[in-house]
Length: 393
Image: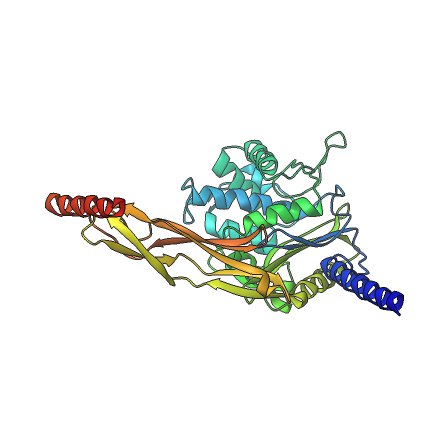
């Protein structure tokens, strides 16, 4: 009888352990039957890989190259080196690009905004070169910066020969190559500039005073709810590719599909990956933009406290059932010294699951605080002295 009870307990314990292991690896154990040669599915918020198939296989990316091109453009705008309304003059070299293009004429002027629109929506190769030459002086200098950025991001299996993904015309020179994993990395980096989604999510638009029609090459932005980017690609060597992203309820995922057998298949497999990601996850709100979190003492200020508020919304993506495992930590300054401007950083809210950081948002000053006059500072200093003295005794 005792042996049977012990056996039963052992069986129950083993079943419990197996169930835990099964849940832990549920994400990796999928039944996808994908025809594309290389794919990866990534949580854009945490960078967690949810699924992969030959994700480190080096392959030509075709026009997905333009994710890196757009990333450098967005960085240049953010740093103030170029402006959206700045006019760019097309060179002869830019105008002679083949493949997808907007048929730039040598000497033609176009605003940076319209050129970025052309790159993001119709994958214009000539627009890539025009923008690259304008920002970095030469196309080669821009390409060098692309490779430097790839190293900075840890894209260990990538090389860029040009800005647009056209294959090398010289058999002795290797063209662009990268991997699904590296594409996911640079796609996630580009998403740090949400303005780019205004372009990549556009289905139909116009340039040249509505004389030139643009229709997005990414069918998902029209036919998949929440899809708002990023970039398609095709050459005979690369096959049909896409780096697709979609956002719903505060969750965002990136699905990279490389060398699909046809255009329809790249979109259907990207859709299948995104559907899977959204089905097994849920979004948890940690903080809302403008939410008052606490008071911070102010020394040498006209007021003695300032309210700390969340700078932005903070939502984290979790596997369903993990909500109770998330810990919200509020790390806030105990005291600051005036003057303070509204928007100055006062601390941070961090969402943790065990030791893993799921996300964070800055806490900022709700209002400005002017510096007190000499008399007020003397009074505050005296109060601090008395307070410390009382604590001693």
